[in-house]
Image 1 (tube, rainbow, N blue to C red):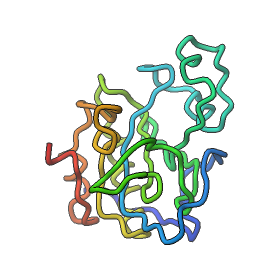
Image 2 (image 1 turned 180 degrees about the vertical axis):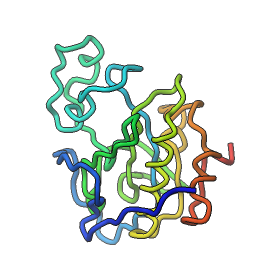
Image 3 (image 1 turned 120 degrees about the vertical axis):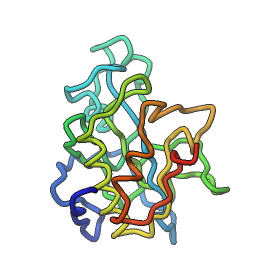
Image 4 (image 1 turned 135 degrees about the vertical axis):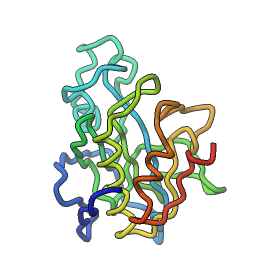
Length: 195
């Protein structure tokens, strides 16, 4: 069972998370109800963990000449609300009240443009390797906080909202483990459990 959820303030900033402001966000459409959390996986360069490349990417400071892979993402302007490191540490890039640019072309339960009504959570990881216990704990705590602050109903993977285009968080992500950690703390439908 997850530890008690940390609190969110009125702007949707998470107590205890490091905040690194990303310019890659904007206002949500009027009346948008935040009802979905989208779980992603990212590592820069791919399958390499640690360092601050993801933070630099989400703040448009990644040097494309640093690594051959970085050239393939040069000029992209993306972000997520949260990033959960391998050790469970949480960095927030966008206040939850704003729209982060994490989902791209997407739909969920018949609604398109998932960025409008979702919270994006990136886990430091990749499709091919398991995630860490500390990441599941932090993710469950974060989802608990989000469920207390927003009318959140669903948790889905990037692959669920953009099938055929995205594969993350990948087959190594343990959806039943996440659901077990959420049990008794919040009532969210975990899409990955129904695969």
